[in-house]
Structures are given as C-alpha cells and as structure tokens.
Image 1 (tube, rainbow, N blue to C red):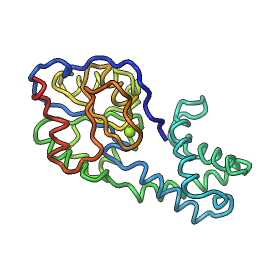
Image 2: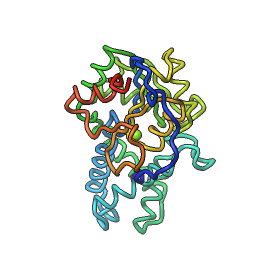
Image 3: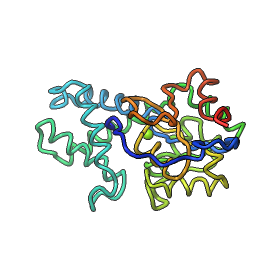
Length: 260
Ligand SMILES: [Mg+2]
C-alpha cells in the first residue's frame, strides 16, 4: 500500500493565479482512480487463499492482501535486470510471497499461484463507483488522457473491459520512455492532446505520482483521496474522496473560475 503523503515543496500550477481559462483537458490516473485496483487485488488474493490453502491459511486474508499490495508496489518491471515486464514480475512477486509465508519460493508454486491470482484479479475488474459516468460527462466538455505507470497492453484492456475506451483520447504509459512522477510524462500527454497546463487538470490517487508529478508540469491537480490524510499546507490542491455525486465531482475537476 502506498504510504501517506509527506509534506514537501510543491511547484506552482497554472490555476494558482487567476486566469479564467476554461478547462478543456482532463488527465486521469487509472489504477485506484478510475479502476478499482485494490478491490480486484483483494478479490484475487482471497480466491487464491481459498483454492490453494496450505501456507496461505497461516495468515489472514487481510495480512496477505497487505503484503501482496506491498510487493506489487515494490517489484516492478525494471526494478531488477531480470524483471523486464509485468509478465516476469508477477510470478516473482509470488515467489516472494511464498517465502514470506515460510516457504521455499518454489518457482513452480509461484507460477501456479500467479495464474490462479491473475484469473481472479481480471474477473474482478470493476470501475470505481461513478467513474464511467463522470468520464462520459467530462468528455462532452473536453478531451481526456490517461497517465499511468502500468504498461499499455494491460491498461488498454482494462479501459475496454470497463467501457471507458470510447471516452479516452490518449493513453500515456511508461513505454514512452518516462514514468510518473516525471513532469515530462504529463507534458507529453498535453502535447498529444494539443493542450496547455492552464487549460488542464490531473486527477489521481497518488500524492507523489499524480499530484506532485502534475504540479511539476504546471498542471493543477485534484487528489482522489482513497486512503491517508493530505499533508498540511497545500490548500490549493483540491481533493475528492468520491466521484459521487457526479455534479459535485465534475465541478471540483472542471470549475476553476471562482478563483478568477
Ligand atoms: Mg493510482
């Protein structure tokens, strides 16, 4: 699980000074912003625990979910030379989980656990409540980009399954050569969308990757707070803890005119 954000300096964004510019571009993070990654992960681990039993029953489902979420955050493609893709990182995480439970880290068991988990994880793909309706409404007023740290093949499939693909104008992934919170990734998204920071907003659940990353590119951010408290001292960063009701969420994201 991502840790609560720490206070740190934050670059100015376009809407810190009144411009009166209309928002025409909204960038969204995908995992745990529009897509309920934590819900699907929990479902995958619960199914794995029920089907495989053994060592998995020596810990509660909640403990294993927390441990596995930590492994997902820390074992990424590129985090070591032999892990070049998500397909290689996934079974490696289950080797580590097997060891954490007191096992040997047997690669064959890890492969089996990984396949079982993966099938259940995919079967549990759901949007965050209100996300498809919100994206549909915003798309009527502007263009939409997804800025994500997960590879394009996985994220485009999620967008299709969630019914969001028809509303998304550009998908920006690490294959472009940079990753969040690098401001270059956000700047790339705006170039693709032929937009500018003063007409754009980023919405995401990660304070570090989404809020600070967007602000580094001069883009205002709305922090989608799924867990943790906000750091003190950043009143200019807006916050949403739900996309429902839709009108309130839409106004928080699009309406910056009251500062003008
Ligand atoms: Mg996220």
